[in-house]
Image 1 (tube, rainbow, N blue to C red):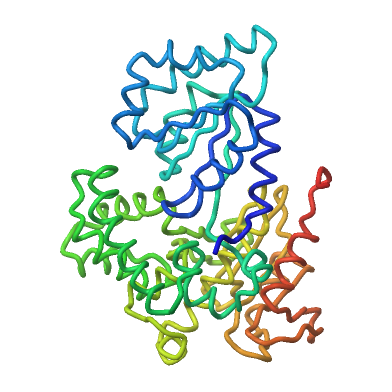
Image 2: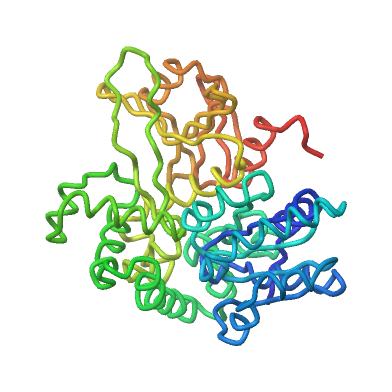
Length: 399
């Protein structure tokens, strides 16, 4: 079963029409190659190279000659971070084509390590490239495929996990996915970091889903230095497996929490790391609340789009907002997450919203109803919250 991804597909087609180089980034197995091949099938003469294949890498031994021979065609380069020297060649070719009047749909780069890829191309392709992130399958795509939200929450959004025949098959796929990252990607991207230690660290983050970062405690548990914890987190963030949600840090004259909160981005991976295979096991596990919170926050951050800044807000006095979405320097939306069918916002949420002068106040619960609560709070299902957040943050350039 293949689940359509219309939003990212449309965004990719628009980007290809606007820029000479487009980078589609996302974790492994999220569907980048499937989407790129679908686009390529519609564009006559597209060249596709998988740089994990020796044969395809050999074609680029004289990259300048090979790529110049593809003038007029879209060239897809998968796992492009394997050949960082290629970016300088791309710059020259793009500039030559621009001089000849060709400005769009030339190169599509696929990568599974965001910061690594962006850092490598930032100087060589500045002003010539558009970046798009391809996340796992979200609530709207799953809903369109008649997949229940609890099933998406349990299994996560990686296509092969979500569409597996049984919960057991899904769980086994995610276990294998975790092993493949530890055996393959960690040695490739961080050869000096022991994969076994990264695996233990990843599991510790799942156990503490949504906790504020305490490097000293994590370092003690792993027997490493506190600075090494920062490097481990950087790696997992770079591989798009972990989100580091920063605290809001404006000047209000209040004592604010300054450490980021750490979330494993895909809920299915949280559950696989903690050996949770069924919904009943999840509902009876201590991680149920933090897992739901992470699932909701990740969904809403992605729904808000790339042109906003997500934060959390917490003061020493107990005022707290799970997610603050800031647009154009102004805090626009406050989100509170509760794993309850009829959730209620607590006093600290109202205080925090007043601190930041936020009018759009949303509480996302696990029930099936939308209604207005006291203090201007809107209680929403996750599906409705996605639509509401998009409407509040609607771009003036939106179609």
